[in-house]
Image (tube, rainbow, N blue to C red; front, side, top):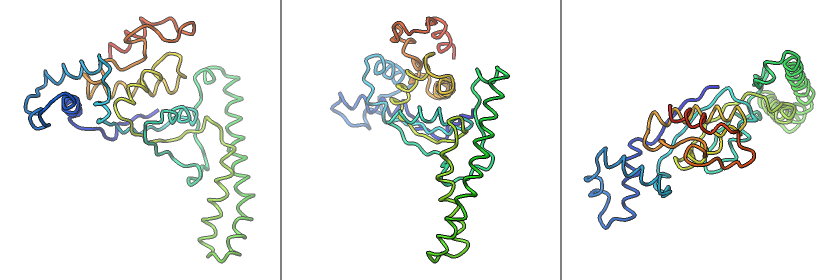
Length: 252
């Protein structure tokens, strides 16, 4: 898994402080800015997050690039709807040797791993055979429509791979770029850093928390699973490791 922060809002905590203070001020942003300093910004950010007044932090955004993850992960990721996503397309990108993610529980079990790899190899073989079968018919049809040979080949391949991709598994490796505002990120962390989240997206969330805390420690001081700042909300389904989890995130 590769997680890279491509871009983020500069001077974010100052921006949040200006936005939040404007809600309760008669003066404009210029006068508000003049009265801000590092200490007052830190105190104000802490106050906002503690009282749950989170709309000002929506003015701040982060753009991540993630590679070496499965489509299982990205299916879960895109359920966080207050975000923008750009994902590698299996419709336009031909995968002649697709990569895949092996879950740790399978990787450490020799027999399960053998079955898993066999299934991946079968998917690749089926994909290639289906592409070849569909290509000739699609190519002839495009030629009949008056396309040049070059254009017909390109169009036939695209049409063939967009249907052949249906054989690929959720394990298929993918790449995605996404942007979230800080409020959406905190919500994402509260759910996906939880031990009950699946291992892969939980690892992604953990890597993202580390990056965000390093850049804006005040804003993301309490970032992590819900149990970091209160009782576990999972009830009978709790992992039972609340102290261990709290120590992990508070020591970042």
